[in-house]
Image (cartoon, rainbow, N blue to C red; front, side, top):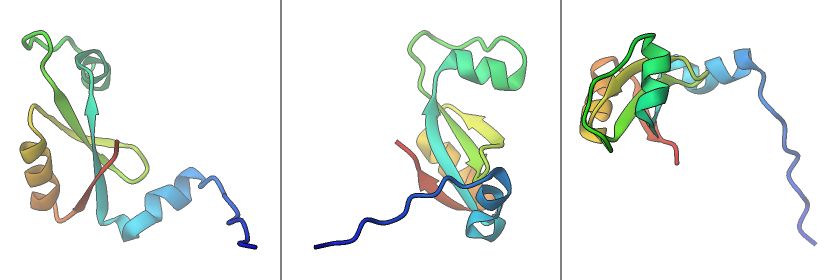
Length: 85
């Protein structure tokens, strides 16, 4: 019988240290969420897909209108990009 793995929620400090501060994740976001992060309205065409580059702890680092741009931003900042679905 296979044993179950213990699932533990990471606290914010543990999450921030994930990957030694060298990991960023990329996730698609809606325009409304991007506007909330930036703190002002964003004027883009309806249906525009945006991508957010975030530190492991969830802190937004950049918002782009292409996945390729998000990957480039992470790599330019010496971060290993991972995707989150």
